[in-house]
Amino acid sequence: MSTTRLRNANFEFRRIFWPAIWALASRELIRFFRQRTRVIGALGQPLLFWLLFGAGLHGSFSPPAWAPRSMTYQEYFFPGVAVLIVLFTAIFSTISIIEDRREGFLQGVLVAPVSRLALVLGKLCGGTALALLQAGLFLALAPLVGLSFTWAAAFEMALFLTLVAFALTALGFLIAWPLDSTQGFHAIMSMVLMPMWLLSGAFFPAEESGWLSWVIRLNPLTYGVAGLRRLLYSDVQLPVAGGLPAMSVCLFVTAAFGLVCIGVSVWLAQRRTSHDTR
Amino acid sequence: MSSTAAISVSGLSHWYGGRQALDQVAFETGQGEVFGLLGPNGGGKTTLFRILATLLPVQEGRVQLLDFDVAAQPDRVRAAIGVTFQSPSLDRKLTVRENLATQGYLYGLQGKALRSRIDELLARLGLADRAAHRVESLSGGLARRVEIAKGLLHDPRVLLLDEPSTGLDPGARLDLWEYIRLLQREGGVTVLVTTHLMEEAERFDKLGILDSGRLVALGTPAELRRSIGGDCLTIQTTGAHDLARRIAERFQVPAQHFGGQIRIEVEKGHEFVGRLVDVFGSEISSLALGKPTLEDVFVKRTGHRFFENGAAGH
Image 1 (cartoon, helix red, strand yellow):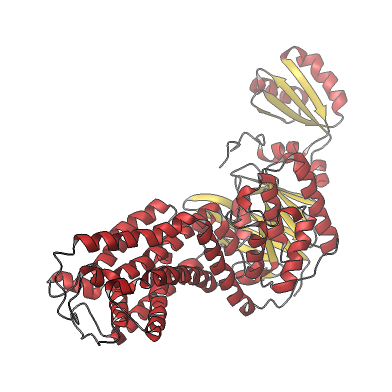
Image 2 (cartoon, chains in turn yellow, green):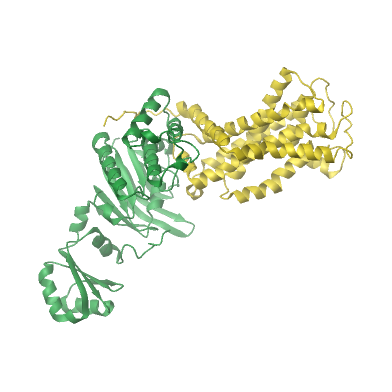
């Protein structure tokens, strides 16, 4: 047998950082496209929400004060659905952490000499790419509700959604990491993640409605939805209003939220516990 | 700074909550040795394996692999070792080649070097025609071979194999051992294998027997067998407890008993059998005399049979 000699006394850990992220992220993409049902789950359900709620709530909706012109509910709901697609994609790609742990793939990664930051970022990059892809497909429907935007605005939206997707995937990561059953994740999804989305200004405007407007203001996802909404109307300069903070605030809060979630995820992944060996 | 030990463990203890899984385990393996960790399920093998593989923290004691400290330098250890788990670690949705390529990236291999290394291992393990198959379509034995290819991909200096024979048919088991020997001969690879199969233990250069978290025996298979003086006599009987006591009294030999069996170590077994049968013949249903086996070693050191403790699994 001729064995290739690959041993290297001075293993360069820095050299494997990006290749490891690339390998883990592209694995996410390959898996996604080999599981058709996931495509339906992440894109289909929000689309259905948009069509059904859009039609059902059409009559009872009165546009918020900041609306630049008359606004249907479907138009109002539009950026909210795009963020829901991102949220669902983030959930689906991080729920696979639990499957990876159960099926054993994760233990193979944990004994590899990759930094835990690379492990986290690999997952996040994969999830973010999928989220962008699906949200992009949905945003292409904008002309249907009378919204039009330039290529430059589309590019800005892609950048901003990348930030949102990173933050939400990181949030999913830190929720999924300690769990050992997907049922647990579903419980957190319906008790935490869905309410978080409902109370982000995605579903209904958050004008002065007492305590609820405070919840909305404290919800980091509000800034993701509002940021996307602003970019969708980049031609008209929406005013700063309740539930519609300034763009700079949206950027700052989303980025800060993402960084905190990534930090917690890396910290969680770094611990050596008996949990990792299950 | 270079010592000769590939793996060095001293004073290693581990607890899961209040339950102690390892109790002051200590051993060393020389470079290029095939070291076996033998023990019944639940004996602590897997815990020890996971500590060596950097998955579990070192709670008490010291563990070094190739002069790297497992607790302080986990990354160095990870780069130097290959790990094959008992449970599958392959992504079933990916093809064999995709699985190996992912592994390669995680260990710093890329491009042409990675491709040719994958081809080399696939050919070596008889998987060349399966490269494009998804792992979910492979049989258990083939998937196991992919696991081993995965562990060997980065040419590790130490290979940790957790129960590698699980799910392999006898033919594939022989292939595996042939391959382990080849790695050792040509690559100088140190191999640590855990097994609960007594019959595999004879193949190891050196052997540690773990029972209830303690290392009850350590040495080459021959050394361990020699530690039992003379011959080993096994008696089947109905009243083992009582008969063992009386045999011990009458002949002044240590007689262990469990279930319906009595086990006696004696010099010149064939002569002893004659005297024994003269006195107790009517109470003995069957009797076997043999050179000591590793199972005898286990019984002697632990006071119970290999499979009565935890044979039903974890």
